Image (cartoon, rainbow, N blue to C red):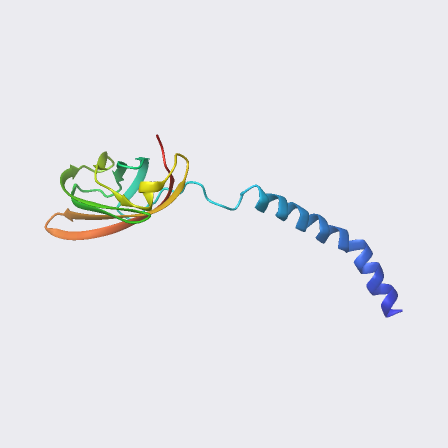
Length: 143
């Protein structure tokens, strides 16, 4: 009697598991769960856009605070490496483009469309205090 109930259960509900695993397999195969682009957002800055190629990196960030922020430094870590000192005042809810023309790392051998992991370290001053924030990006190289 127990074996009959178990067999009936497997026959009735087993096909649901098979279909579930087929759907998940197809989604994994086509990269549905793999991020191709992830623009970072922190408590102070939001990434609006970027441009990345073998020799140049530019990022557009927006100030999410209610007071003016002065950007002092940018540094890149991960697949792209570079740094630059700045003096950019950014009013509340306004955006600015920050660019680096001397970058290195894994990017030097990249092709258009390659995916890069980039940590963007921003040092800034708000009122008289200094602070920093790191935006984690997953981006594609562009022409």
